[in-house]
Amino acid sequence: MNNSSPRPPEASAETVAARKSLANATPDEAEREPRGARRKRETREKLLEAAFRLMAERGMDAVAINEITEAADVGFGSFYNHFESKEAIYAVVMDSVFEEFGDALDLLVKNVDDPAEFIAICVRHTILRARREPLWGRFLVREGFSARVLSRGLGVRLMRDILIGVSKGRFNIPDPFMTFVTIGGGVLGAIAAELELAGKPTDSLKQLKQLGLSSEDIPERAAAVALHNLGLSFDESRRIALLSLPAVDRPFASS
Image (cartoon, rainbow, N blue to C red; front, side, top):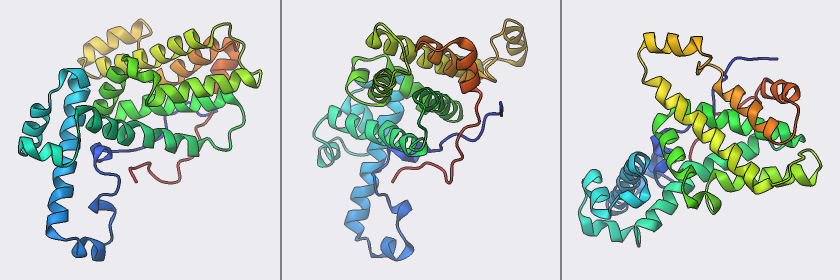
């Protein structure tokens, strides 16, 4: 068993950019891009980046369109050249930030047959990603505690995976929905704890560690508790949570 935390799936703040950005184009393709098209793409990317940062800090409902355009340093009217509404830009941000990450996780575990191992891998990689990218983590925590978790993002995938485990007889739970709420809340709480601990001075961290509140193994501990909530014994849950993570052939990035 390997208890070390490997490099999690990567994605920089550029994951909120357009699905096919110039960064992924060949030099010839970049050179051929018309000036007007390039400016339009760059404006769209600025709007997406600004929306991502503002919504991560305050949540979608607390952000106004004019705040997005001001943060992006573009004219207010330019917003409607790219998006019909605040909900429309939010949907693109969600797809870029979470759906692409979820798709990459699905690909990573496509050969994993055990639903318990599947969920443990996804929980660990999600927390590791939030550790590497605090802004991404804050966005996830905010959206994870909104009603939208039931229709978009990683929450829908977690519910799917729980139901797959139930159908295969791997998970023995009386109330799948409330188990989903418990596990989802636990993962979000673990991420919030990581973000909080990251801002603590060294002396405070030492005191917290003495109380068992170290962030070093939070991904594994969160995965073990999640599996225990799904009906596995804690010994088995812990064993699965400590398995080596599948190798990532290349960093996960936006397409």
